[in-house]
Length: 314
Image (cartoon, rainbow, N blue to C red; front, side, top):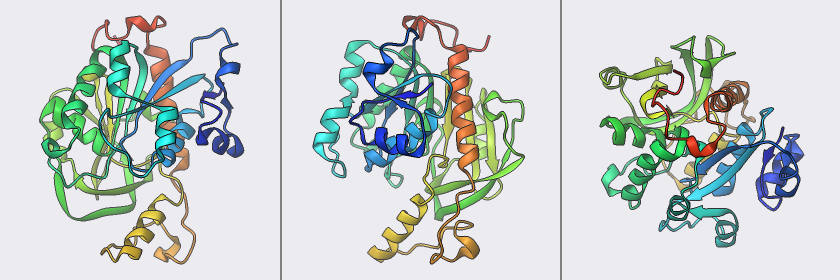
């Protein structure tokens, strides 16, 4: 089954041209099934690029998925046309006021790692989003800074600045082979990393109920499950396109910003050569496994979300 998107959303034509099954609202409404309702709280400045990346991954599923785009209520977006935001995004305040519920919610990262959480202009509203997920979302997926922020809010775990940016494709390993989110994973693989901060494993281990699923000897914990809050936190970027790290590298070089060549990304670390995508299959595995787990555990009556046991696998 396809992912359900507005036919005028740029991701619709991009993904259809890639061979991803997409369906407009009128066609989807003719099917007598309940699609999974997945929200995307998009905190990234390049909204169209980010929404396309995540739509590509959650759309590669045999299930019908309806994607809803959400933004912070009063935060100004400068890198995406106002017409796009008005046409496709709803402010969180409006979503919360309607009382609607979601089977899944993805909270993206944001390029504000250097700021203390309390100095983020929308931090107060974002903490309301985190609390709202506990009664209105079946499973939440926090990505990079979004995942770190959720760990701070729910568990008081701090992010720590790195001496140098973790930048490139780093080798990772499976730490919990029995996890349903890791079905089909190889023992070792690479994931794109682009961040100035880290979460430390000893601080994660000190919190009962948190389980590290993926980890790296070089860049630390990557994927953490928080069953009590029905959440996953990932600090690296399976969703990246083949050229996303290249775009970041070229931008910094053009701006004169000191930056290392992303590790293990270009053939022989030569930025004059096209980069190689060596994470795509595991990206689809992870998000496909997440969608499958949401489908198998979410209530059929969406109104029941948030009313069951906090451990939704019992």
